[in-house]
Every structure is written in structure tokens, then in C-alpha cells.
Image (cartoon, rainbow over all chains, first blue to last red; front, side, top):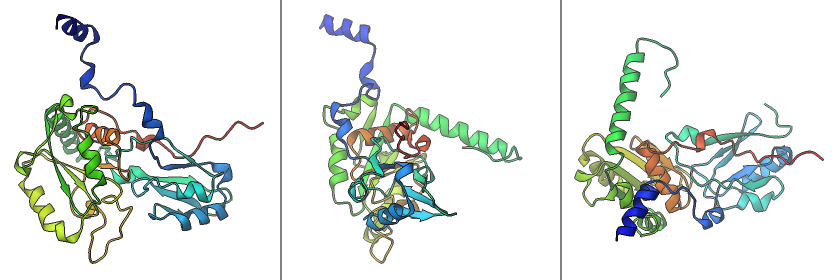
Length: 112
Length: 172
């Protein structure tokens, strides 16, 4: 008991913080896609938009728009265009505004 | 909160920002959460339930689930806001004492799964003022934890700084 008390004093109150070291399986969690700009051509972007089952992707002004909030991290886009799509690896996605979740990705050769 | 100009409205903005900060400081280590399921497939619920398991142990952070909206400071909403639950959702929100926070959990209340139609509203922010959006289908317990701590101002949000553009490999 005394040892636990001393351990607590020595280590401070680490248990009341957000995990300083993430769980080892955090890397395997499904995450939204990120896009490789050089590989993202107009044709690839069209296929990605068509394939997205949750409507999280669309095109506007020569850019590909990703709504991270609408993305279900199903990886369909990665299967459709494995060269142009990687996984972002980010799962701490909380946002104070839905505007912060809408990301614009430039398309190679996209016309504005 | 960023005022575009230093107009006469600046004072109110500063006051509002300070009040919001005070509220979050009060909630910071004692926050009671009410969850409401508006047509979710229950996977979000199972992730929320894991927050209480010893591994994540929500109580150590001063966050608690409460069955009564009268005792709740924060409302976690899952599901695509089916119209059948709209009255219940409104009553729950109204029953909560001020100040209160609303968190939308998962892709459904963020508009990713259902369009608005005669059965669902599709997005929670069409119905209630949402303070924090937590994407994911479902969000992992860690993502939920981060969202809750963002809601009470104990963690900064990360996603607004991300571009979702993969880093290109160096040219050969």
C-alpha cells in the first residue's frame, strides 16, 4: 500500500490524462483516406466519386472534396484506385464545426 | 471564435469566448453525459459502452453517464435522426439544464449514411446546435474520448489542421 502511494507520488497523476501513448492496435483502426496528389487525375477522381458509397467525395472547381464526417472509412476508394489513395492513419477526428471536416484536394489537371 | 473585424461586436465576442471558456473549465473534470439513440445500428452504442470498461475508464477523467437528461451537461447523439425520434430528441435537449453541449457521434448524424427524406433528417445539425462532431463508422473509444475532451476544452482538435493529402515520395 505504501509502495503504491509512493509510486503515485513519483509518477504524478498520469491516469487522469488522455493516453500519452496510444494503444498498440490504434494503428490498425479504420481511418479516412488521404490522396496522393500526383496520381489523382481527373479520370481517377471521377471513379472515386462514383464508387464512394457514403457520398463523402465530390468534385468542385477542379478539386476533389472529401467530407471526413460523412466518410465511413470503408476503403472502397482505396480498392478502386490503390495508387492514388492511401489511408490517412488519423482517427482522432473530433471537430468543433462541420466546416473543419470538409477537405479540398487539388486534382492533377483539374479545370477550375 | 474569430471576429472578422474589430467592429463594435468585438466586446460581445470576447465576452462570449470568455463565458465559453468558463463553462468548459467548470465542466472540465465533472461532466455528466446522456446518450440518445436516434435510429443507430447500435455499433456506436457498443463503442460508447466500452468507454466505461477498465481499459478506458471514463470515470478517472471525471466524465460520467447519467440516465436522466435533467442531470446531464452533454448530449451524445447517435444515429441518423429518424423523424420518429425527433420529438424525444427535442424533449431530451429541452430537459437538460443550461449550459449544455451536444456531440454528434458517428457518420450517421454527420450526414454520411442517409439522405434527408420522409423517414430521417439525415444530419443532427439540422435539428440541434452541435458543439462537437465525432466522425467514424463507428468512432473507436479513443476517438470518442478525444471528442469528449475536445468538447470540454481539455484537448485541441486535430482535424482542422490536416489536409488529407498524402505526402509524396521524394523524386528519384
